[in-house]
Length: 507
Image (cartoon, rainbow, N blue to C red):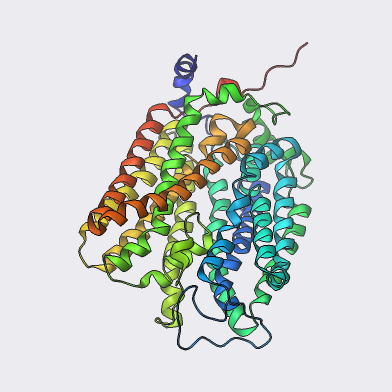
């Protein structure tokens, strides 16, 4: 059944989903471009909120790094309380975010299909902002209260990303899907980067409680903008031009309306194109989280280079990546001047964020110029984003003691891996636009599982033999990504699947 459907759709995959039409209102003032900027801001705020505690925890514990000793702690405003939390306690607090985050991914996507992406995303962001305002009070009440608050924050944020995909299924024309969604997704990277720069200044000059009050207040203000300026679909937008509305609606007419209460779970479970996305997401997230969590330890233990304090650990801990807790210990240092710290720590952020935007623009260009079909474009960008970082990962153990080369390779890896944003990530909407939010939630859960398992697997391998263990860990991650890429290239699709089409209404 699956094979027959795939063969029937194959001719359509040789060309873009639609002929290249004129795109009314395609400039920066168009309604869909405005939505991309608003979604970028929403994700920027969301990731700044989730990064706030990871950055401020240094000041919360009195200026000393978690589990570390510092002879001369930095100045701390007298009005900011300090808590003597052990390294283990800090690890529990930082990881508690994921207690809730993994539980609401699929639920958020399902709810967005029922109630609308605007409402679900905005509600998740508003709740996240309100919970952030309560962090200083929760810390005062005790570790247990703070852990519970962070778990609730994870529950609230778990719905945001899937809800965004449900919204884009109604707004993004096939030939503009990559650029619009990747502009929005770049907010994740720039949000973490902005939090890294701003939170430290606030901690030092105003006290760490103000980090949460300011970030939470900005989040609440942005939610007001979101609910006032965002509309669920082009038909309900009061200011969109008639030409742009007609262009978007006609370009998406083939995909049907949002799903109802029931989901074709059986057909989804049997769909090879969907499994191709899920497996590729698991594999690429394995490599991504390995870069974030294991490379700092490798650079310290094998290359004897301590750039980890800022360049990698702050990136990892700010993202609250699963498995990051161990590498977050001792991640703050005064060994670099502030300017050098900022410049070095900005490299992965700038590379990853710009990589998202450029990949989206290039993918849509290839589709619009009819150079490649949808399936070919998704597979090309997935191949670049999965294969090249794997090659860099394999090369790192053989570069000797050159820490500079390691930084260059790892920065390139984190930049190029963002190209999967124009590949497997957007492919959810290509094959099942009606269920894109729910499916994104499911595959995101796969990625969270990969992020939890990968650091544990690395630890087991390295504990046996340091040099051989690291080499085997890198080879295993690269091999896993090659397998995921082969599976995706073999079974991935660029057309709407039969089970995702809307059944015609009975006469």
